[in-house]
Image (tube, rainbow, N blue to C red; front, side):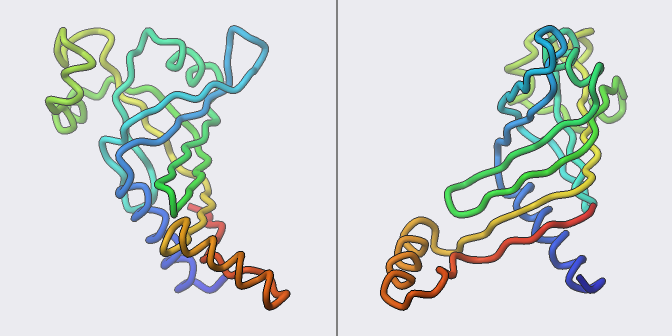
Length: 165
């Protein structure tokens, strides 16, 4: 992949991450011999490099999991676009960043306020991502599959790429 293609693919990854309100954060479980655990999360910020910031309850099972095993996956989907981001997570108690990202939606999850000991940030530093984009969604995909049956050719269901971040 050329440098320009890499840049465009990275922009696509960030666009998908910023466009989806929710993602699934998958971590490795501590208490149950390494089973994978997935939880819905809301990214509060996505950087141009594909890093993501979330609020997290520092006393939660999920926080314990990422403290013990930093490797995580973020999965985004909206029906026509799918994205899988692998990375490393760390918990942070950065007061300035908490103040910067705090909002009324987060406050609903932490009614004791942003100064509560439970309030922490989860920073996911992205390593790589893989995306699949099917413009037109399910209808376009169904038409592409129907066309492939008639023509005998592999269906064109959009683009996919793997990106090092």
